[in-house]
Image 1 (tube, rainbow, N blue to C red):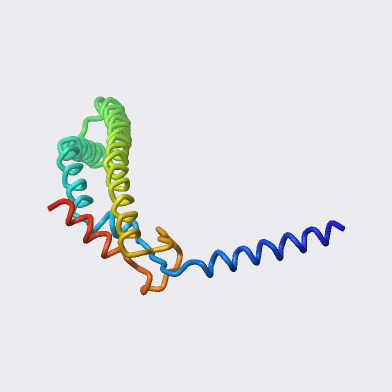
Image 2 (cartoon, rainbow, N blue to C red):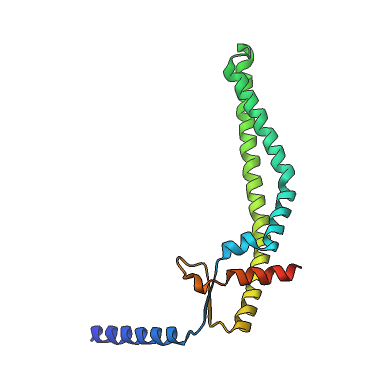
Length: 166
């Protein structure tokens, strides 16, 4: 009895799947990563983030250079033995501060980037829905493993997003 129920369920599911697939007349695909790289809004976001975080990045670079100089001095043997332990301790503390600052910078950058790109994604989704309605798409897929290029409408989405910015 259980086998019959499972068989009927499988056949019904298969039939419904074929019916659903046959009802799709126009299909589109969007490569989200291309939208995030090539749209004017995405490029503007990236420039804004680079500007916002550049001073912290420069401070981090200075910390790194100072640490490397101290490490070279310790390894070269130019530091007197009575100061060597203090310099090693100083280097370890500098390394710890550097790692903490780098981790904090990465976290802050990623939070801001996610905030900005969430806004871009909402805007892109509106553009995609508008495009789907105007051009009569039945289904639009974002990010798939493989898609035939004839279904790729990424360029149209980027063009529509860029037109909004101008």
